[in-house]
Amino acid sequence: MAPNGKPLVVGLGDPVMDILASVSHEYLATVTSEPGGCFAIAPEEMEKLLTSAAEQSALKRIPGGSAANVMKGMANLGQGTLEAKFVGMIGKDATGEDYRHGLQAQGVRPLLLETDSGAPSACAVCLVTPDGQRTMRTCLGASLELQSSSQLPADWCSGLQLLHCEGYCLYRPKLTQEMTSAAKKAGAIVSIDLASFELVRNCKDSFLSLLQSGCLDLLFANEVEAATLAVEFHLVPATATHEEKVEAAQNFLLQHIQVSVVSLGPKGCVVRNAAGDRASAPAAKVKVIDTIGAGDFFTSGFLYAFTHGATLQQCAEVGCAAGAEAVQSVGAELSEEAWPGLRQQVEGILAPGGGKAAAASSGAVLVTAAAGPCGTKVH
Image 1 (tube, one colour):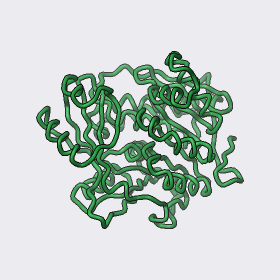
Image 2 (cartoon, one colour):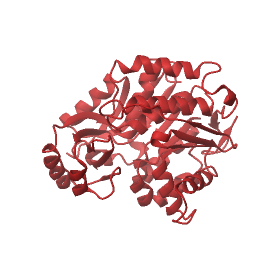
Image 3 (cartoon, one colour):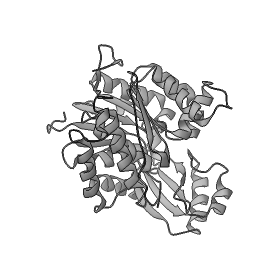
């Protein structure tokens, strides 16, 4: 519990200001041959991209970053019943201040360090095509200067219930290992997402090291990331079916973690745990406006339910409900009008007998710290 008596959840990641642009498929083809991914670019490349994207549509700015989005979702679902913090590094600039205020407006307490180097706050161009798919390019700037947990206040994990790390933290393995280890020693649950298929390819060594450390409890991936993991780690032949790749990835992950969650876009999600339980939930049939932040809101819903002792089935359904709401909004924030309906839906799923009642005992797990610094056990 936090000092105020509320459960404390913390997100670790890059405080990125999202800059949204609506673009055509033809324009996107001039940027990349692989739509849907996300990776970092140099400042001069970012400047050129912003210039060309501005010719496609008016640009909209929303505080984003994967882990920050998860914290925003959990804070809004909890509506004052939990304390959500976000840890990152910003520049001493207007973008950083706008970002700080944006988090506070969403009920998230910023634990944002400021660099003295003059580096700018991070930003990301989000290119959204007419089908709602998003392709992202980031310039991380000051956020990369958070390199060690020693830069944070010593009591950052006091009373911690959950630490959620975005996958991009794997580009800073020392920071990620220190933070996850400290969280486990504090008795917290630790989760991470795989962020993008490019990250799975680029961070194999740091990911495997973290996985083998025993500091992870839950891992989130979309089906492309899971399939990429299976191929990159040679778990199946490259010619295997998509379903075989996802299955192999989950089999591998569950040798090291307790819960593997794979989102399947319009097909919903599939969840498995180390005890052999499975759950799945369909995606709601809604009009897709924008997929930016949809995966993050899915994760926020799943983790909100998980930290409330829900079954895997209930967690899956809450995640899909939150993700469905997100794709109907522009950018990685929901309108004030959207939250009451989503909270009511979540309350119904989490009520006794909610979700698929037949799965009431499946996946009712609580992950707690074991005797070792990073081991876990399941009750």
